[in-house]
Length: 608
Image 1 (tube, rainbow, N blue to C red):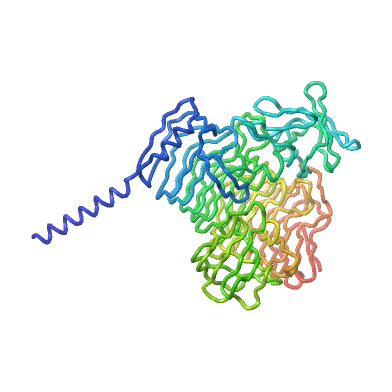
Image 2 (image 1 turned 60 degrees about the vertical axis):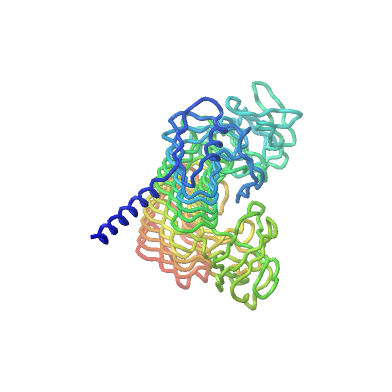
């Protein structure tokens, strides 16, 4: 009897303990007010006495100024490192939730809205983010004189901040900060807000600017090569080295992050940035220009970006528009061997200026050795120690002896930190660059999306120089997507699907790199010819797609083939339908030709 009673008491205690643990969360309710909310939020987070917190906002508009923000030095990959003014800083928490209830957060000046550092079980729901004044200079192009190297434009004034002084334009002139140059500049269609047809990226360093009648500015630049069309909207975001202050959301060294019902209308860098995060979901969210706004762009850089993440990444039912870089970029990071210190230890270098300070590896991670000239992933070893030298260099010690033929200049890739990636039910359009650029050796599924792109719509590209973004894909399924109006920027080397590694000079430029890619049951409606560009691929299936050549624009490169195939093996093109007038269906080199199979297609033919 006593033993039975004791068992009941123990069971009851365990149930109460489990219940208490599951619901032991500090809930912080935040009321709406018109005052600056930075101090209110900072105090709420810093004074929380629990490792599990939830912030609940009353619906309304909230203003956040940088004056009393938390100031902390931050390494922010693909942005500029430095002292950041952070509004919402969450660090070392078991769980953190934000329920916005439809609240709108308006930020001002140089601010980093959200940082989640070393947090687990992150949930952000039902908020909208914007800036009161964008970090942009833009206006309508009214005249062009290519011979004299000038164009005229009428800059927007309401809601923007810029000035002309001594023949120079500065902007945004907020809290003492301004860009000295127009810098990265791109033309947009005024009506559709797409990147202008045939537009090129430019970096403007105007020789002089003259004020004309009726608010018109005449801008002289002797180095400009591609002039905008009269009637287009010209947009500048400042010099490349300075124009990425911080993403709207930076999540780093964390796990289980879910963003649901989050809308971003502007950010001073990317929308969502994830570094070494295990498990991410972005659901029912959006990055786009606010309805009724005359702004040409939303975020300054990528909508979403994942660097050395693992676990499952899911982007579902999202709308990504107007950003000044890719819809999503998923990649690992190559580091270069700078020095072999001893039989177990190498010094590695982060090569790109926007990667400095990035945490490439930690104790327990598995790492691939990649030895030129062969770009294949080679031996694997386990990291036993990492010694940080400075933001460029780290010393990595491995469990076993280094490969005998390893040398300086070879590269390493982190095997442990690679994700499974799924994107479905999304719309990505009206922005600079690619819809999707992705590099992970694990499963990739891209399905049921609506895609329109300035450059290649989907790009599979590992790079062992410049960006040093690893690496080769090994399992890709791209199906049931709708591609409309793709590759409409001015550059010639783009396609709807482009697979093209960019490897340094020490690597074999014809060696196979990407593998096992299926592109099937997609519908493609676009004006130009090139649909598939595949270089150094083993195992590519293009099956059951419907391709329609449209007349929305005049083809820019009518002599390009539908299929450009080079240095590849085991390519199958079957059961596709093409409706259009193309002069050239295939361009195939001798290597690819050996194993290429083309059968049961309609509207185009292949002949050796």
